[in-house]
Length: 328
Image (cartoon, rainbow, N blue to C red; front, side):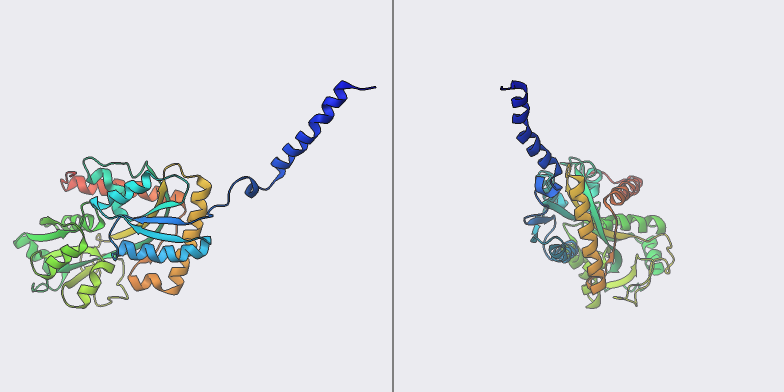
């Protein structure tokens, strides 16, 4: 005799077995492996600068860590905004990343019509390095030491080159003026190189910028180094004193570099990228590649990086406001 109810139950068994197999399968069988294709790192500045050089070092090691190609693409323009916009509008799948400097997080403080909020519209992945700044002056000037510079600037207003508004070079120059109790006449430039050329030519008297950017001209005698903003002297220029030992203990400042993904990137992908980037930084530190550029490694998880950004933006916004800076 046929039992309809039992027959119905028997028909359900294959479906139940298939369903159980799906839930029992490893996670990798359900979702695609990440990463399984090329990762693109966008640098929002021209090739050859400090940000670009550091990004290429990290990208090279990251390829080994992740087992996929990692390419660097330069999207220079608009004070870094063009490259930032390209990443902000990219798919939030972890395959397009932004490698930029501290300038990135201050877009709203520097630009009157910023196209995005760098704190809200990006996912912090990793902060990778810091670079001390070097104060250089025109070689024709008789000044040799920081106290002499400040004394001279109190007698006659000195001109200061600003490679980019809101960049560490700008903020450190504001801090120098504040702590040295002097007033500078700021001369804006579109990048470090044209600013350096004018300092070397004596058209502008001083500039603060990352040591990696100014050291070659300082070594060549085309600009005169006065001080660096790190807590201790750099082995790349041991003859240059720190600002601290030159009488300004509060002038400790560094440019820094980080990596961001588009907002909404899956946390597990951010975490995987963070671990791979930190491992890459450790390798670069052991090999001496970072030391050769005058930069110091940083290892933070994504949450620590996010908290660092919050503190940096607050501190920098206060400094810009106290100096009377107006967004452009």
